[in-house]
Image 1 (spheres, helix red, strand yellow):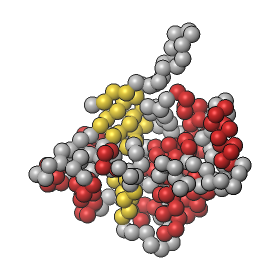
Image 2: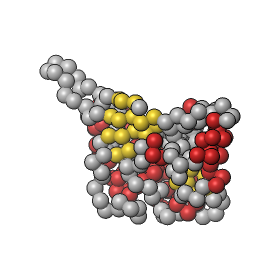
Image 3: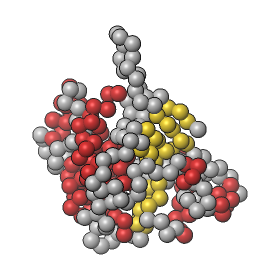
Image 4: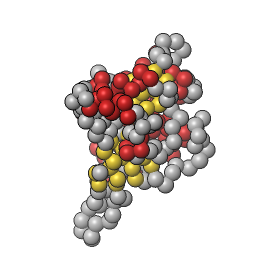
Length: 247
């Protein structure tokens, strides 16, 4: 019940409970209705079948790649200040021990949305158990949320309610931040390949995988969503949210 529509606490609870023993060789993390957001529209199996033969440590499973300026590709203006309050901490936390440890965030950022991915036990265990435990405490309400806009009265009141009572806190914007960073935490580059490259032979799906799925009614779909930075509106108006361009 503490998930309240967010996946982060469930994912982290699974990792923490099985970190020492019980992690499968490869774990697939999915939300309910995941097939709606995956490259093959003909059910889950078409999307997961390539994992039987993969030697990759991490595979993003969403069809949609979002790209723009870190940390808020395609986010509404209302949430940008909340991300600004926590982005530096989350970047250091996620990139520590990976290929970009100690570096500032990239000027451009590309991630695969919806928190759908497969990752090996080896990759999970490259990061210490203490990291996952700290994140889980935050997402389950035992530690304060970090992504809070102090000027947003509604969000501030909500975070105070979650952090100052014994109730289990919903993930709020902290989970949206993790959605952007799962791949970094698991050792992938912050700017992942665009879908056309990621889905090419030798990437996420081989030519045989695509042919196998197409023969059974599946059709490979990929979405590349490029977000412009918000621009100031004329005087008297509000900020315009970033535009989306799909291809």
